[in-house]
Length: 250
View 1 (cartoon, rainbow, N blue to C red):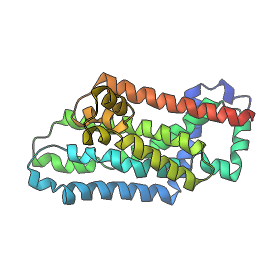
View 2: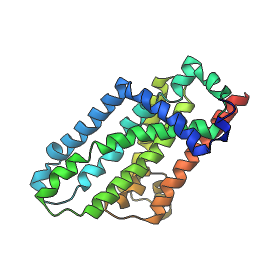
View 3: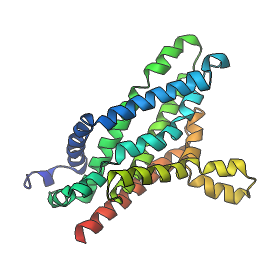
View 4: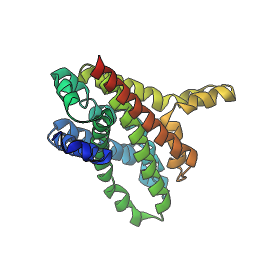
């Protein structure tokens, strides 16, 4: 194992770990609970609370607009076990002795968690498909909205993994991730509720993931928002590797 693993490229080593982690998710009741909650809550919100059929508009913006809020619960459920459980059971010490780099471990956890989230997002596709016959929907806008929720989910997942790595148990990881994600998702509401100076509003909005998702929810692909999600994801993953490296040499 030690002889052949280092010869693999970084993506292959990470995908090898991700495959193992993803299979573990399939045996976790929390995964199915999160998927059912996600699908039911979003559907009930769209058809019952938003009364979608009475709006007479061929748009799914109210549906996708709820995703940042639901992510506050879903992302912590997916990521809370990743590092916190390894630390609680003591298997993280064994993991660090294997012939993997910090990036291998972090990307393996990230790809598996993102794979779980992507699978849940795939389960939402039948809903838009069932509504296409009811009006003239802009398929380009729906594609942008799905791209936006995927990028938003990637950034939130990398943040959730970082917080899981800093936590001692799953409960702490869930609560910490939920609180932090609530802050970064809803902080832009401050600028909408108060008449703040423009420079302060821009500064606050910069840290809001939900704010950077707004252009995607409108069916627009803004290169600045695209770069923001990619760079924020890379930043959180980089910080995660530094935390792992610190614990490795502590």
